[in-house]
Image (tube, rainbow, N blue to C red; front, side):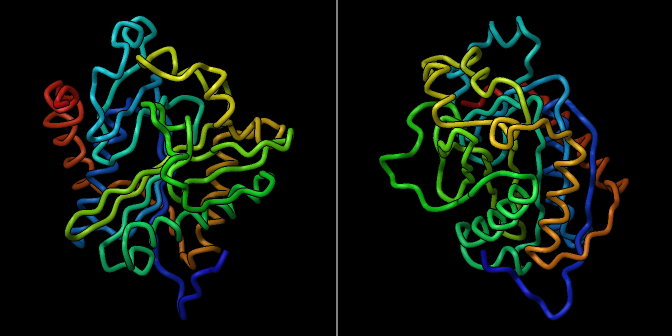
Amino acid sequence: MRRIAPVSRLPFRLIFDSEFPGSVNMARDEAISRAISAGDSPATLRFYGWAPPAISIGQAQRLDSLDLTACARDGVGIVRRSTGGLAILHTDELTYSVGLPKDHPIAEGDLMTSYRRIADAILLALTRLGVQAPTASRVAREDKARTGVCFEAPSDYEVVGQSPDGVIRKLVGSAQWRRVDGVLQHGSLPLCGDIARITRYLLDTPTPEAVHAHAQTLETATGRSIAWREAAETWAGAFADQLGLDLHEGALTPAERDASNRLLSEKYADDAWTRRR
């Protein structure tokens, strides 16, 4: 892993957020990203959780890939992301988001170049948490997921790790959204539980055994239980060291909270957005 080594460390806001419904989490991510793009907020690294559990689907993914009856039965929320990718069940996990202005050093180059930079920071974090031989590399086209499950197979520069049984499995799923003036990347690290639970809520999915063969939780990869706060603080330190960040803990601004509330009512909690495909 080649580290960014700026002459001076890059100022960055750090947010340890709470557990929120999926619609609130997506609204907050976008509100922060838009404020950064407008020059009203600094580049930001945010960590958060989900309550109740929710399935997020990619911006272009069809809603009819979900078993809506099963989701309603089990109280699992549904939210459509502004980023691409496939469905993720968010529960028992650490979620991160990185918001950058388009001209930020971490965002320089094309999507895959910046994706790789952030992947290197994730690899350092996982190594510090005890994951053996985490890697991130391009994936051959024929090896990519052919179902609606994000964690069924890795995409380009998504992170895999070696579990104690010696098998390489996907560990972190991420997606990036680029606009004219800004970049938003967010992703999920499953901490514990059954990684194949998502198969209960999607139609035409692989079997639980197939998901277990391709994906894992942090607990499976390390052989120990790791609390959310430990994982988040380790990631923050790894991002600071790998990317040369000067992290300052903060919170959403009043303007970001107002924007988040507007996005919540007009977009992420609006059935028309969720059912657009």
